Image (cartoon, rainbow, N blue to C red; front, side, top):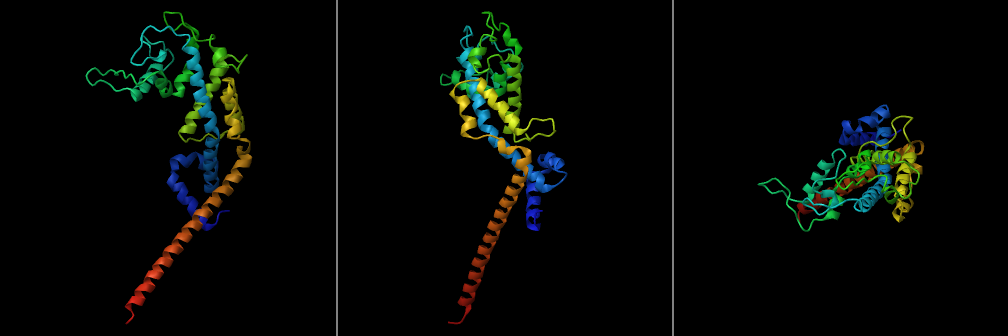
Length: 288
């Protein structure tokens, strides 16, 4: 049980985080502030564990797709950026692809006030556009629509490019690959927006199971990069709920004790300085 001072500090934490964000944690913890805030900080730890994998997978997927798909595209004319991604007419077919492209170009190019059109910039090239496009754009390139020709040249991406993009997924159907990366994208969005990612129902995958799914998705991309993040940064074995939440409670109370101790020392130092000043004043008032 928290002490009175710890409990007061927990109340301050909860107030600063806010009821809207802390609501799901309090509901799961039946209103217990310590358990809710421990779960909140456990969620941050989960995000920290997943982040290196998500970073590696996002970069690996977009680069793998780019390397493979650029070989399939018949270049006929560019838009404002010399890239197969910005062809005129476009070959992009999946939902929101054109909007995603426009959003990416708006980060890289200025618009002419008179025409409202983007103005080409020779310093902005293909690699800039690749980096500016969202993870959702790249996972969209796995859609079924790209199993059919996307331009007059008869270009289809799948299954032609599967072995190039996913050398570690031999025998895995594109539909399963797409489903996995869609889940990873949803996880990535929740992690990057600081949303709850812990399992909310008994049927939900555990953090370790989710971690293993992301690692497998990374391995499907093959290459050296797929072997490093989970080994370099560690794994989520100790972050499953039964072990993690008691540890999170202990760590949170320990952190609160540290904050309270630091505040007490600061107050004592301030009081000592004030007392010294008062003593000096009294000395100065004494007749010489």
